Length: 442
Ligand code: UDX
Image (cartoon, rainbow, N blue to C red; front, side, top):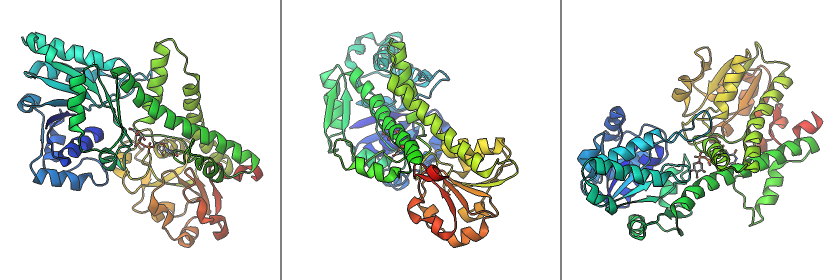
């Protein structure tokens, strides 16, 4: 089938390359001409395992192209998919400026029957507005008679950064929301080779499923973080508690890792947006407000304990391992590593940081006075404390005896419990995790 994908961020690009991999003909459109040029040369502008190779493959097969000119590729498109960003405003509300601009643009150039499919995460009710705007722009362009042939579907994405391409090909489910049976069938045909349960539903339900899924996962994380805080006080180990919970099929083992809380481009934004949507409909979603509060408090508590145990950080040398919001990505949006590094710097610590992938992104936001080390070991040289904030596998593979010798004080604060099973206390470290019972006796 012929597909136009608008927006080449990590969702749009991964999905575009994914559909091309399935054999469809895909034209990817982005207003950023520099990005289009890079993609055209086969360069993925962010780190996402497997995507670079997949892009190369579909480019060689001639199944994908990149352009800034929507008009030049829209002819013949059966599906026009929108995957532009909906970043949060300061109120928590999703900013739909880019989305609506794209809707107007589609309407101004669309001259044949097509399905508009929205991948972007949008507040409930937005898809109806998008369709109305596309049709309005078509009318303005003198194509009133075609408007009834244009329909919209909501197909939310559930891609995790770091395994997005795999998630595209093997999703847990496909959600297709539409009022129009034919539009839903065409969308279903586009996904024909993807084996997964289908949830065929209305626009509103599809829109809400996306927010509900992320909010539920965030709730699991905040829940286990509350248990972790209690575990610290009663001398229990949250990892064992999570294991004991996870074997119960009704609960499941996933998203029960305690730590400094969730970050990234989706959870913080979507949970706040859902809280905001509820409020706008006159409903106080109390659980969500608590999920957000617990997540904020988690970082706060971690930072306070670090400062307290060090007896203040002014003039102390602190190493930070991990700036990406999670492993296998270079994304630093809402990252605990960045926030804690900024706070340490602002409180007067001498800071040296390291991340395997996120150094360039971090340089753009951290103070020029922060040192960037070429390796994890170099970052820890002469440090009074080492703070671990992303669960990169390589952090487990360093020589801990060398690390012990190179640090001024062998003190590790692990915000992910990433090194907890290495029993570093037995190698002479003072080791603090989250919810390991460490603070019951401390
Ligand atoms: C998430 C959703 O999983 C995905 O379906 C959606 O489409 C986009 O948002 P992503 O942001 O890539 O994906 O990361 P995810 O793996 O879900 O982790 C989100 C955050 O939660 C990270 O900061 C991670 O470190 C944290 N997390 C995750 C925990 O603190 N504990 C856990 O047990 C799991």
